[in-house]
Image (cartoon, rainbow, N blue to C red; front, side):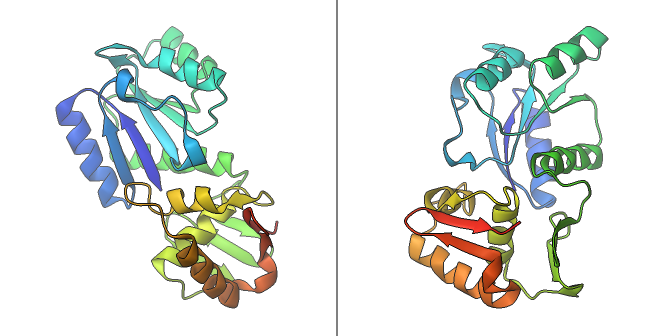
Length: 218
């Protein structure tokens, strides 16, 4: 999963980036509101970690602006402000969670996965789609209770489709999500990965919408 971290503290930003990369996340770290995207084309970002006190303004103002513009990506506020009115302002302003500094990295990771579960309308760490089960945290997929031998790219692909079951994910969106920090993945490569994935989980589970993209049958 790709995370956007907006945090101006150099020591915390470096430590958090390293710790989250060790947990398997990819990270883009920004330190100012001015550098933050106005929106999220293709929803390549899985979650935003947003500090409140930034050098050029309030993170809550950025949060409010994003929500008004229709940004739906999960956002976790990370801040030293622990007063009740601050927590209410963050949650009422559109944050999916509010974490007070200092915090333990395992707790933050658990909260990231929790907001992602809610975003994907899943009640537990095991995402179920009939006989297909996906465990995002352990990078395991099962079909009928049997673990599937998926390549890292195949697992990433089925996970991205599972984030929005029943919805068509355009190829352009998938190409960005599969390598958010690099060059978009070639459409031909995506077609090959989809073909391989269909052989392993069943062709009927991935629908093609011609000229648009793919959908995981719910």
